[in-house]
Amino acid sequence: MTKLIAGPDDQSRCAWSASAPEFVGYHDTEWGYPVGDDQRLFEKFCLESFQSGLSWRTILAKRENFRAAFAQFDFNKMAKFDDKDVQRLLQDAGIIRHRGKIEAVINNAKRAQELVAERGSLAAYVWSYEPDPADLPEPQTASIIPASTAMSKDLKKRGWKFVGPTTVFAFMQAMGLVNDHAIGCVMRDKATELRKSFVKPV
Image (cartoon, rainbow, N blue to C red):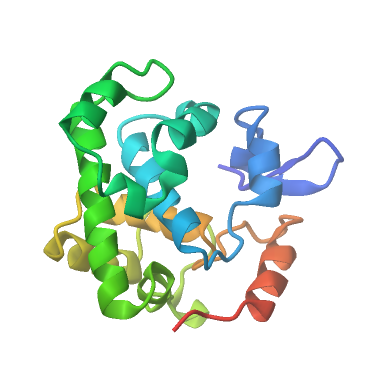
């Protein structure tokens, strides 16, 4: 399967970006660019958890609804959600009404607080798992990598839910820990340059 396709401007992009109209903007402005903001990182963990078993298009289309329903993914606010909030969310047609996933991300908000207390920030923890680019396979040839498996195992040990290695790898791709833009994609060099200027959280 080809990894590249001509975009609306005739420049080469990752082939998946043509799978849905809204993917081009997401691919060009977000995917693969390094993120050091705790709230954005936590949001992505949550959205990847909700995506489990579903398509990313479904989640992306509902992202603003998710943000409104989950306090913009402020994990300090989400950690205070109770049974009334769970019931509220189960009635919200704008999101994925899956009790297990809803309860999981509320649980994960509490676990995120614990990580911040221990490591200083969620970003410092996440970026400690950044793999050496020299150890990575060719872009878009792997579904998981050792670093995503290691983070997944540690998060599970810490009590996080819906954080399997495939989910964590998708998170790492999207948040720029791995530059998985296909070789030849017009955005690959941009992602590389952004990583060079990005100050790794410690």
